[in-house]
Image (tube, rainbow, N blue to C red):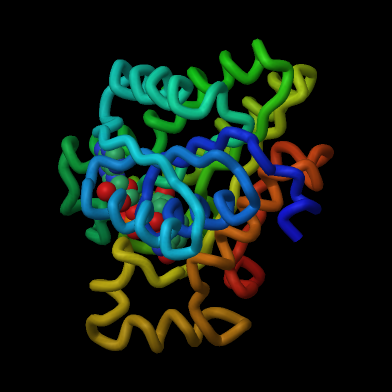
Length: 252
Ligand SMILES: NC(=O)c1ccc[n+]([C@@H]2O[C@H](COP(=O)([O-])OP(=O)(O)OC[C@H]3O[C@@H](n4cnc5c(N)ncnc54)[C@H](O)[C@@H]3O)[C@@H](O)[C@H]2O)c1
């Protein structure tokens, strides 16, 4: 299976070692890629590295906060020192604030757009420049079903994910002549640290499951599998697409 993907020995940079970034880093390492993962949280990074070690794999870690353009550029440069220009790049950081529009302030809007969308711009641009110089590359952004659906109490998050999808499409168009593909995965509800507290409260889990045609929530490895395929040689003619990994949630 790993050989089919042809990721052996290729550099892969994953931003975000949480539920979905962590699972994607493991999947890429299992496919033989040289993986570097970046997160601001040391314990999350340690967990990613030790999960890999337990499976006889290696994941390199870099602790950094990516909240500014300077930090994003420094992170890419540091990771190039570790793994070379990445052949595969994954953006898997984001946060939500489930409050009504009228209760959110300017800072709430700004901080969600900065983390979810501006970091994708800063990192994607910097990685893209380097991939163009190499004449190849694969980029995957983690979007969301919120890019399509108008969930109440998701305004900044939904705007950021709609923005991710359009950023991804324009990068895909501009960079296709350089041998680079740019895609997104759009998860439905997946149980991770981002969603667990919400799912555990007030019957949210049951009511969300009832909205999914598959009648269940997803697991991180299901998102990681889709991302790994899009980052592999097998997906060379797929670009500018958001693959929804949602048990049919966006169909209803
Ligand atoms: N879990 C879901 O159900 C779900 C559904 C749709 C989309 N997504 C998207 O998937 C992506 C990853 O989400 P997740 O579920 O893995 O979340 P998570 O909270 O488990 O992981 C996110 C990681 O980002 C890191 N991070 C946050 N701010 C950072 C910063 N400034 N610098 C460096 N690292 C930072 C956190 O430390 C954390 O480890 C996000 O873009 C999210 O919107 C998740």
